[in-house]
Image: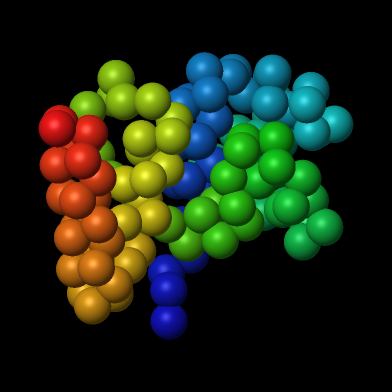
Amino acid sequence: MSELNFARNLKRFRERMELSKEELGQKLGVSGATIGYWESGRNEPRMGKLENIADTLGVTTYELLFMQPINLNSKMSVEQMRALDIIHALHSEDLKITNDLMVRILKKNNT
């Protein structure tokens, strides 16, 4: 079973979008303090709010709840970090297929 990483992921995705707690709170109709409580794990949003949070941050609810953070170069784009998160979640068999596909794409683009 996947480990719940909501608080850590909320902060990570918010910071990646360069939003303050107050700015994200305004977008979601809650206070900045509420965002802080969610990020600290002190409180959790209601289930109906999760989809709204994920949509606002440009991620899936699965990514918001379960993705394991990857601490790499913070200068990477949101799409690059998202791709790494997805790759990180793949099973080993699917990871091999994905690696092979990426190598083919790089070879094609370099010819």
